[in-house]
Image (tube, rainbow, N blue to C red):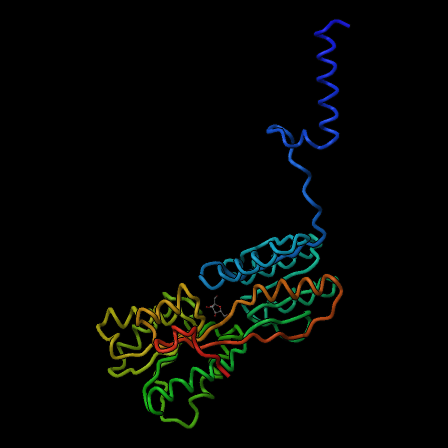
Length: 320
Ligand code: FRU
């Protein structure tokens, strides 16, 4: 063999040995290694991504899922449209996902598709807003009635048992709206607090602002606005500010995201906000248990804290 052809042969031999040893994979133009098989797919149906709290919930789900190499989560956003959300659940069933996580827009219309998924053998975790009945695997959320009651008691204490209240309610076809309303009424029962005006702002800041404009036009004296979420409290604050009355009213909200409600408290816009944890991490923990065949409780109740200007530094106070 001539020298040059011998060199070529040696080079070829070395090359194939290197690739057998896996060294060739480090070459810049080598194909990437095949992805690890993901044995579990979760379908996550979010009722909307228009509000920071829901964006946070999806981020919490994603972060927790990324810590589980065998999990893949497919996210769908129903854009606050109940029919679209029903279709999403049906699509997940059709696609044969291993588990569904749903944060439903409304209780009644989502009950049936969730029950059908269960019948098809797909476990369902219901997160934050409930469905009716018991055809789901596990519900995860904070106790909205308790939060509403704590808000009522907080207002009673702050105002020495007297005062005029505007209540801006979350969507009353959703369970948190119903429970935050009932709990608050329980919290102020027997006090001299009077609900002057109440309206369903459907969890939406622009609706809350409009409703508050009506309340301001009708009533000269308003002491406190209790809004079922922080976007609602902020909308009411903006309406009062535009009318030059924000300093005479105290605003209370729910959610307490650091970048939203807690920041409003720090800026002095809200007097208090009650934490409503997203439950994203707990949903993934629970999903892993279900997928591995472990039994999980039917209901997981998350805790809550109240944040006011006075307790911000220590990270709020636990409510009980
Ligand atoms: C977001 C939101 C939150 C609220 C929760 C209740 O859509 O309105 O602000 O706490 O839903 O389900």
